[in-house]
Image: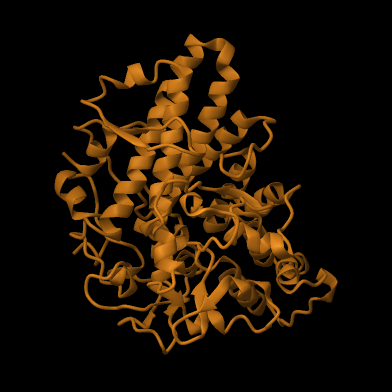
Length: 474
């Protein structure tokens, strides 16, 4: 049985995101599914399990991969068998079921299977409990967002960027709108088809949310839908819609300033600019061990630290000294105050307001509106330096130089948050690492077959319709 179908018969139940031991229930076929999803509490429990499954992949290989494959971090131990060493050296093998190649594929598909179960049974519950229709539609809206995010995240790892071909006809990932059965053999959709479905799910979620106000940063909201649409349209190079939805997401949500900015990383607080993040109560501390411990596996490379040219930049306070007493250890996953050891947790960001400013700045620049692009960029820089926007001076002669400033600001602002390598690839940039890297790979030109991970071999063996990626699957 292929991996996709194995995953299809597993779903997760939990009755509280804040505190629970998540129970994985293996079903025989689908015989117990209707019983579980026979009422609204069961549907909500399925949705909560979906949040848990999303945390599982965001707190592990998926978040680490775009950092180690990029050019802004150093892997400090480069011997065989070290976590993410193959992704650092671009030696990923389709046989590596234990590690990034197999785990990202598996964990994202597990999350997607959970979400599709919720979406499959929700319509029948509306018919059975019409007085709870509005409540059920809110569950559907969150699940549609999650399905869109799962497809988008899987795509970014295993498929070349949307702009790889002029018409986006190159292979994407499977579009899974129902939980596949054991005999189903899904194939890879085109990149255009994948993005069309992502956008449709998000637009459907937007409609279902209606005028529902944002509950908190730990639940999907209409603001999260807008923010993800902005990111998706940015990757698609639809600049008008990237601007439109970034603006919607930013409306009424300020940038975090001063201590509030630091607190959203180092205290147990969601953060004033948090649009969506995942709750890590009683869950893995892998991100802290990997990035922020006293002896982390990954530290900031000179390519990143050299971008912080102003000693007053507040973001420098999110770095701690390494063993050589250099500010290279990120503390974005190090809780400093406001907790007891049993409360310690690490809540990865999925979406926050700072990214929306950067998305919109880039889209404005691409459209030739340099004044508006510079205005958004200045807002991020002014916050970092505790200055007013009017005090920020930027020097650029043309669009190319302004884009370079935007790229640098994205690196400074979004480092260690799972963006770096994905940005390089969608920009169609060459990968250029600093001279001090311990990686065997210091330069890779774009386009490059190595810019995606191989489809796991177990999937290819079991599913004759599944197409591998050139070079990495050969």
